[in-house]
Length: 337
Length: 187
Image (cartoon, rainbow over all chains, first blue to last red; front, side):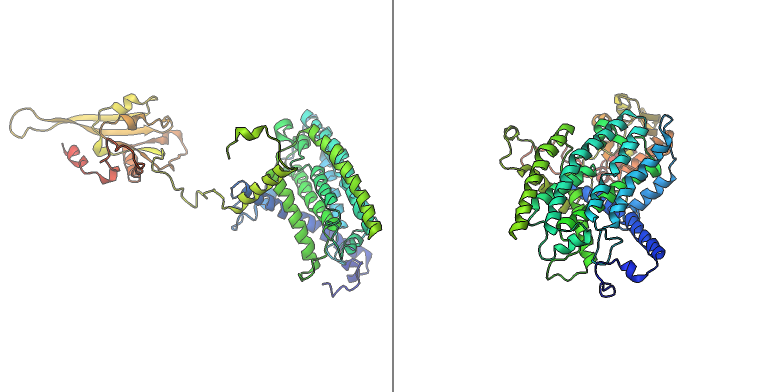
């Protein structure tokens, strides 16, 4: 495939066809296919990894081999469920919210490169686009919480919003450190800039901060106060069921894939492999997404939920100052080398 | 891992050491085989003292009614009649009770095991069988034939610990390996 599409920096689809509409349809099908399949894989991995970390087996029955079809079965179940909207709910907003939560992660996948030609779109402002999109998702959660007409939903939504404001800053600051070193903001450009040295080595603290902030953005344990089930039932998703709830779940797992992919591009060289291991670029990228997704699940299995005030404290008093200091260090690194 | 009182108040010796320790615990657990037994496919390996169901060795029962009277929620049904044998040569004929019905209502039974304890002739046993669920509550009254079947799977008691006093009824084995019950039935 790499030899077939020799011109690097141009999407392989545009090298296949010069027809704009055909290319658009192909890209849409590819990105949507990726979004509908890969999060299921991560969801299955979560089932299995969490289970084994608790000395269980997890799903074993659906689809003869080790319950591989469990998430497909879950999907079929969600589709069959009744479409319930609470009487007091704001019907339009309530229905729209799952889509608003889900679409930004699809948008992030659009700019995720799997090799120097295997991507849907290489925006010049790639990383800005990713940062902007990753903060849109919380609007969906806010919409869900407000329109549900449920106190727990509203508390959950407001927690999600507060969390986003607190953690968006370290997320952007850690990405800024990378951009300072690479001097480009396109996702392919950032991956290309790491040919000799992955940024995780000079910018390790920023990598940690990026991963922690991603966890918080996705409301994943230990930063899952917006859905803290023992306090506020299930936060903004309390009133949701059936397909709408499935969309929120898909947004969560799609978000894990998308932000793992972004972290891989920013810090782990994207599709760049290690020297001496001859594997195709897309395999490298997929492997990195897999490893980072596993890390997200591993953290969920290990750590308990923080308290709301501890979470805010951690963001404002630890992550933001540390990321500022390391941006300074990145500047020194850039000038010195 | 039990919580060691000494360590509760001590702060972590290193920055983030506790966090790393937590990660190693979950990783080690993941790499060990899971404890789950895949039940319908694999039968569980139950210990000898499992209180699955109460089984009846009919041959040992003398219809003394002790079990049914001791039962806290009256879940044991016993019907019997008396039969008198003709004397061999004059005198009185010997009479004995014959068991007509022995049933336990497992919808009521609370598995206290008092009946097993009080039975003077070792007719009742704990059997490890547990698959006797029914679709209707009335069907949970199991009759003596079913109770007899469950005795086939009663496990021998576990060996005594080293240095333990020998038990009073050490000689008695599981109901399958009985010797004296046949004579008791024949009277």
